[in-house]
Image 1 (tube, helix red, strand yellow):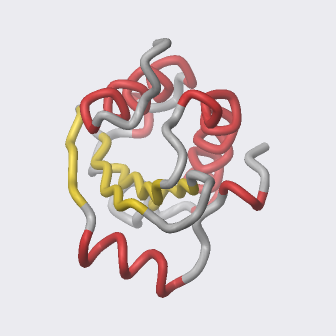
Image 2 (cartoon, rainbow, N blue to C red; image 1 turned 180 degrees about the horizontal axis):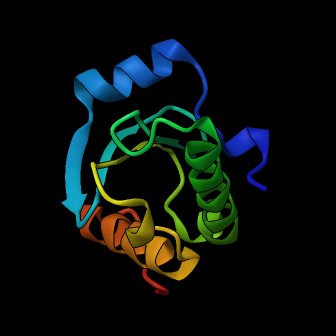
Length: 118
């Protein structure tokens, strides 16, 4: 589980990422990121109703995202706020945690947020 220290939660912080952040798109994921003044990176995933009307399915994807993020948070450069969006996609395409992990890492690498060791 992703620690609260690394979760992006505040409405004003999220609005700041939307207004000033840079964007990257990889497959069914869309990433918006912005440098923060902290010594930590905070991430979040937004899963809209276009993915599924069932809150159970949306929360399952969020839990998978948090598992992947907690595994790779040390590989992301410090000092960024990252918001991932799940584009309209069928539930079968992201049921696999390996597929979701591959797309998350691809987006982070494309945005230049991964440390050099990967």
